[in-house]
Length: 146
Image (cartoon, rainbow, N blue to C red):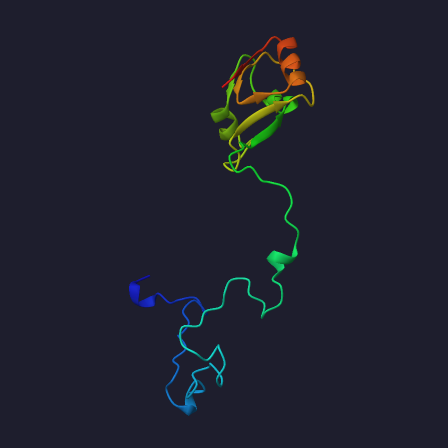
């Protein structure tokens, strides 16, 4: 394989529309802008969401509620999922990420109480529910909020 054999995939490179190059080109005279009107004038841009004078969709739908953009979103991990770790393991956020138990779209981990735990684990995460805490401590483990 050498540089001379490289080719683009079909449709990867498209030639630009050359307007105003004569009537035979198909884009001559008015250059695709039609005759007169506001869209034929220079400097005209479509306003985002403009619907030709009709009330735009963004203004038609009701505005309700509030989204708090500073709120932290925790990934829920059940107690039963912690059963895969060895007895006496220190379970941290990094360890859970290495084991693909949560993705980067979450700000941290919260342990929930669904399932049973038989192993003694030291858990250091961002949040723990009350039932999960009792199940972990009943198995002989400990919980630390980071």
